[in-house]
Image 1 (cartoon, helix red, strand yellow):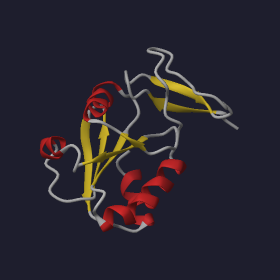
Image 2 (tube, helix red, strand yellow):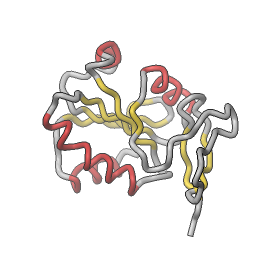
Image 3 (cartoon, one colour):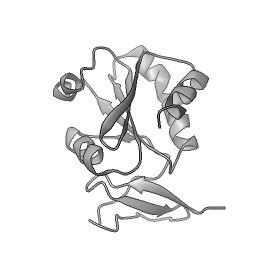
Image 4 (cartoon, one colour):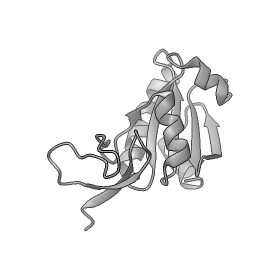
Length: 144
């Protein structure tokens, strides 16, 4: 059984092997910043998104959401479950469009929730609205 999972650093974008048995903070081998735990959905800033888009080797799934959106809240557990199942295969990120409306404009987000899969800094898939866990998982699997 593999006791390490890949994760991208939020500060520099480097891909790191995260030891799952670690009981303390794990830091990036390149910049020494704390790493997110694999399978964790990470709330990010626009700067972190830019870093990951240009530097991360893992595919990225970004959940553009609003805290006041009922369909967004309904999708959170679905996204969380997918992040756990696909830990080490892709990074799952969450960006609050109410806090960062300029990013919503940059990515032409017209409604929430909107999910975008990026690979190598390029958008490879986009979906908007709530969907079943099975449909969401299949949609992500066909793009990431």
